[in-house]
Length: 173
Image: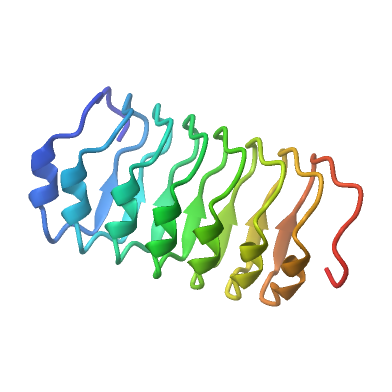
């Protein structure tokens, strides 16, 4: 991290025992598909780069616990993200996300979902399936309504909805 890398070598995917990969504060726009082979990877940080999209193969990082992708130019998250069944934290704040994939509801071990400062106008109903979620940061988006199923987020301890366009909250929230 904190270099001027514009590319990551394919050979990095050969580091089969790698558990922590910090590529923050570079000039990256993409990651080589060889990184999909990093089956031991638990933490991936690609914040403060120039990503407009995450690769679809991201869902193959089956042991990933924490994914940090904030301060990029992401316009969407791939449906394959839902395959990260062990993910505990997802930090995707300060991007250009207008929506979330339906598959977000498959991240049932997720504790922390940080989506502050995006362009979200609505959230999928599947968000209500995140039964382990304790922290949800949605401030500084363009949300006009919240999914009714959000009232099912019984583990939620922190919910930040500041600076949106909400006129009502769902029953039971």
